[in-house]
Image 1 (cartoon, rainbow, N blue to C red):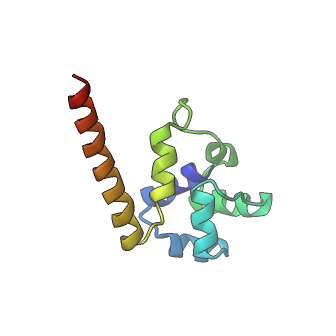
Image 2 (cartoon, helix red, strand yellow):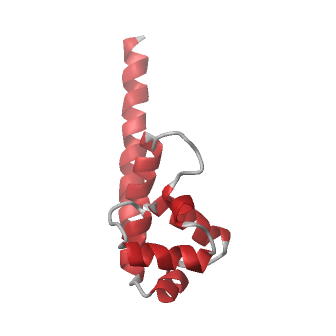
Length: 108
């Protein structure tokens, strides 16, 4: 559901702040909903559907039939990192890739 809300919000060029004001939720809580960490009450779900002028079931159903991939899971974890946290994680990944490549070369 959160992914669909984010898709609809971005399709309409709304910020989290703008949508949160329209549905009377804090932006931080809406961010948690979009990342799948929190859910919405039925009342708020109805409000979101009304704001987007779509049916509730279209919010609950994914546009694609594939399950959430590992990439999507990592992407949702990275979504709200500040610059310092993002750079830290990015550097860890870069250094890990160097180590894996070096190990692969050794194993040849």
